[in-house]
Image 1 (tube, rainbow, N blue to C red):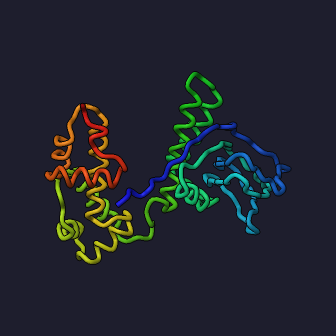
Image 2: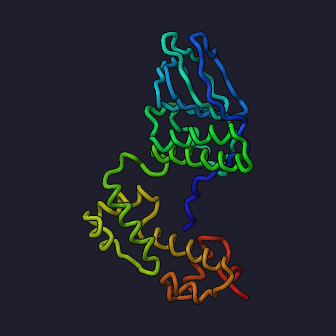
Image 3: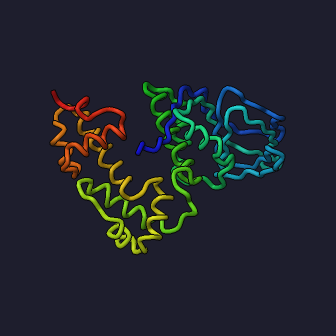
Length: 266
């Protein structure tokens, strides 16, 4: 069993972050930005946007997200010109899974959560002040925003999947007790679901069976422990609840591509 490739990206450059108050004549006509991505938060007024032959009206606290190469047109409301904060940035996806997820993100988020709105305001303030470390701080806020948008849109988990809170509770039980080996029946009982229904939901939620997920948690934790350089393979195997050192070594190599001895203390 190979670990499922996780989502990862790198913000390589922030072009600019600016707060703009438009007038009644502000407009865009079929604008396409091929070299950067755009996030924009409405902080006042209204604007009418068109993309993919669909019309949208933006109001205060709405957020728009445009991938590189995205084409759109817009007009500010003559009666109530819009105000917005815009972030133009460049990023690179670390794998195909992340690239697909970014492509599938919605372009419009109505009434963005308050945490995202606060990050926007903080980014603009930090960028405008340009004090030492401002690039790191703005990138950190932008990473938080992208993560929140991906989570809100259901990128990490199917947002329509039932019993997600029960599933999260059993995942936390596994994560807090990595040295244990929980049976399907035990986890299902903890969630208050039948074993067959729980098995199906768990696989949809994590991409793993319950055994595979527990092995994934054990081996990734073992890898972290071995990377400290202070522990031996037998010590680590016992710490993650695998008493058979030969099974541990085989499972470790299967999941990581290297034997655990390559990381252990000499």
